[in-house]
Length: 451
Length: 155
Image (cartoon, rainbow over all chains, first blue to last red):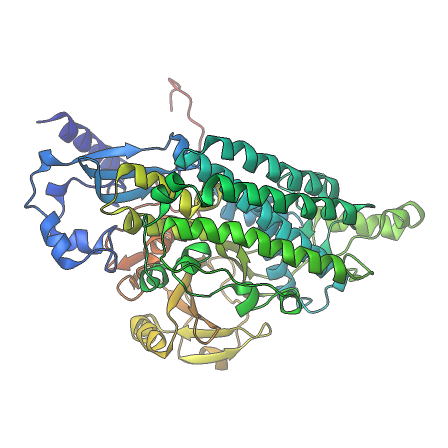
């Protein structure tokens, strides 16, 4: 008996002892799977043709190929993503992502936090675009409360401003990590440098660089601070020159193109079948952006272009994100012009705590303030699903409420979790070095994958 | 199948478990190209869920509910299907052959609720360790009641 078989047997014993019969999560050895299983397995219906599968199953001897683990501790896997790759030399034959290393039960936690506190939970899922998480949670709660049409204009535009700036910071982080993965290490420094500028603005507005809990049911937590407009304008003035630098450093550079063009190709049908959204779907040439196609907030009032690719490869996904930064800047400029005056949160006593000044002079206000923060507010029975466009695709929140102050069930449709499914398809037949480019171009955030 | 106009005006349909795949096939032909989300809810402590009887029709409310959100990119439309799963028979057909993108989502529902998907190619736990006992998002799971075990302590 070989060492591998020993390990497999002992794993099976553990599983049986635990009384579960689900089987192993890992990629199985070739001799243990039939052709049908390969066809329908992690290399699903649309991901591999039957002739390819027939060539894979059984016929090839096991000693020509090997299964290796990439991750969970690997700098290019963006966190704790573990990929099991079956390799024939340098070529990837099969791939299976194994996830869950960062699972902290956030959906379960969400059931014991009030709607008031829920923002602190969801904001930690996709830590690269926390404001979009808060936004979708707040919008779902508002939909259940039936106040989604009554949010003050200023709050809506502040939300849009923050959502777009967050998209910029998230894509800048992608530029940084993508550059590093492909070997343009100085890009990592540049990307983080620019992102820091955006985060500094977030800190001024929300008090925190990340995990803001700033967008709350009913509006936002506070009004924009004095001088915010100049801050944003400084940012918008500084960025174009930096983006032009990126173009020189990466877009036009032959090595960069060689590493990305034609790598990790996905077709439109495959992307749709695998429920991929965001830049992955758009890279296949399909123009789909919830901001334009199913507008929320006031996206129907601003002008912007939906950037699409034509080859569905890693280079398309890179340039889509780069140009989406520019489009977001365009939106931010329009938001600056359109930012109305008025309340930054709804004046509905049910969801909004009384202002600080009132607490000093009114006992009732103090009690109200205390109760809203300890007990939260009750949300009518029902269920709602709200989806918005996060930098990674469609992020959605599904809440079932039983009429109490905490969600009965809170589910977040995490774009990274779904998008990871495209990796086996994109990697198949490529080199291990290309696998790194593929992971990078999917841009998964593992906090959101595992929740 | 019964149509609902809820307070929040989403297109929500209650589908009998036996008609699930048939309905999915019909909807896919109707232009819902993408299964954008698949999840479940355990209504153990909230069985009534305040749904008008005329909305339900023949459907009997059960403990578990599988919720599927379909998206039509061409018609810019969404539809939500709600399937009732009895506690005694936590099995439903897998949508994998129609929408391969549901693979990870079904695995997650299986992991978290213990609902089995008939015909799923690789129904293993996805987020929890494979030797984990129980299904965490069930309402009777008892989070926080897990005994903390220390090395060498007599249990």
